[in-house]
Amino acid sequence: MRVLLVDDEQLAIDRLETLFADVEGVEVVGRAQDGDEALASIKALTPDLVILDVQMPGRNGLSTAASIDVEPRPELVFVTAHEHYAPDAFEVDAADYLLKPVRFDRLRQAVERARRRRSIREAAERAGTLEAENAQLRSLGSPPPPSEEAEFWVPERHGLRRVPVDSITWIEAARDYVLLHTDTRSHMLRATMSALEQKLAGTPLIRVHRSAFVRPDQVSEIKRANRTTTLVLKDGAVVQVGPNYADTLESALGL
Image: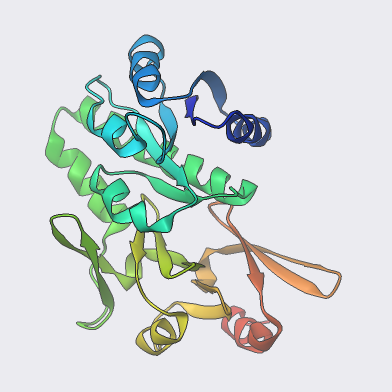
């Protein structure tokens, strides 16, 4: 994937470029430090993915995203230190939302999600119908819930979006919010982890840390070092296991 980095802080761009050097299958093709420069670069470079800071002087990241008028439209991943912008960010159909400082595993996960979404859209274009795209997105991101209660209603700028629990691969705490990760995008919800634990009882998601839930069938590797255990998920995300949740995890994985 060809990637454009947009951030008004030079150190932030340098850090992202360093992280991208270790992500397979990507090429950083340009940098921009404000919204107007970003729009010009998108037209000139036609990147597959734009990593876009939300807070910038002048035209901010959300305004920049809303002003993109090129086809094919690049996938968007927003980066910011302020999680309360997330509902607006996902209103423009962002693939992911990363909080600073950006972790490598979360960046890699965001890239894989963007790559998956782009492949779906390209396949839909080859099929020649928008419905084909929507059907594939629904099949990856919104399978039918197992029960009436197994879903979340996530606020967005103009209403609510239903997110079935069966579509969620893992959940992480994000300060006063939680991020519900699916195959094709992430959703941000204002909720506590204790409230989620009650709601998710009896569902495929289990709590593995005070800040995380995972689906056991998404675990591809378990790493143990220095008395700590981490899970590597199929999409590359790395989730730490809290000592109080180790027995629950081992039982769920049949260890």
